[in-house]
Amino acid sequence: MDRGPLPLRVHAAIEPLIGLVLILSSWIFGFSDANDAQVLCIVLGVIVIMSGAMTDWRVSLARVIPLKVHFMTDLLVAAVLIVAPFILGYTGNGAATRFTIIAGVLEGIAALSTRWDPAEAEPDRVHTRSRSTTPGGHQL
Image (cartoon, rainbow, N blue to C red; front, side):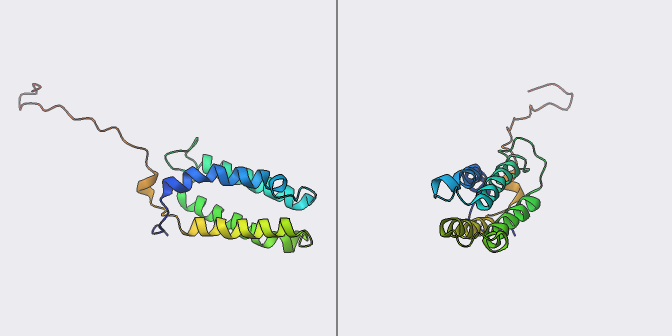
């Protein structure tokens, strides 16, 4: 799972943008008349932003969600986006159908191509040099 070419920090950086595009997609891509697709994209956009903000990586607001759970959430969002037009019945709206399927495929590719390395998720540590002492406990 942790061997993709996309660094975790890049995934973390683009996550809020993906969420924002999902939230605004119905107005950007002209399917605001497809209520089911619009609500779905807004809800999934909020989920993407919240999961990114709560994942256990260096740029999160609250380190609550483990990386593997975030990975699974990304895959679930991708799957929902891909199958939603058929389940929710908005295949008659080409813009909504195209957007959700393409966004789902791209979300899945992003999740599968990310290097989910826990070492990359650790915040940068400030390295301090320890003071050397003599055998008698005196500082040098």
